[in-house]
Length: 276
Image (tube, rainbow, N blue to C red; front, side, top):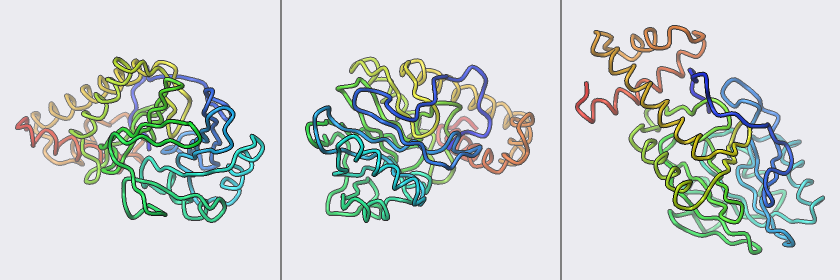
């Protein structure tokens, strides 16, 4: 889900529907919108030569899309052995139950309410399916249950809504918490520095080939927005609607309700740190 007021100069890449890396294929869901960009990226992952595949975020409850994901796997000579969820927002997870019916594969997620099967997902866990290795990276902030998945063989990370291919992510109060989100961005930056990750496979928008640059941009954007909100409060704009009207004055008013949720998260963060 995108921020209602993305800044210019945002990360850019090519929209991919098909192979993105040696082990990742994107099947784009037909749910484009201002908040979902081109639609939800459903990722089909498999180790070369293996008959087993993992699907990350089956997407919305759209029968045609879910069938296309299964058909894509079958054309590749694969069967879906496992479904993983980056988080529980409907544009990522609503189709999970129906997808499990189509594939017979369990669904694993951080939130127990989203799981279909006995196993959840924990921070630092390594998922191995048919030789494909995915490392679970906790990235709360956009939502409390947000996860990313490090694909070391492709030097890539699947980020769900934590980092998008275009624009920036909403941290929507109350489930979204800015402090957690900043920590998650720093955790992803460490992957780019310490583990050589260079590719972002996002939940929406194009693939990014400069992972470190994308994360640094996100951190700078958050710092800029936070400073604007802090200044607005210091200048007498005391409520979230007042801050939105001041800071987001150049944004389409239809997006102000979404912006208000983000501002509430920022004001909460500033209050927790004694800055307002």
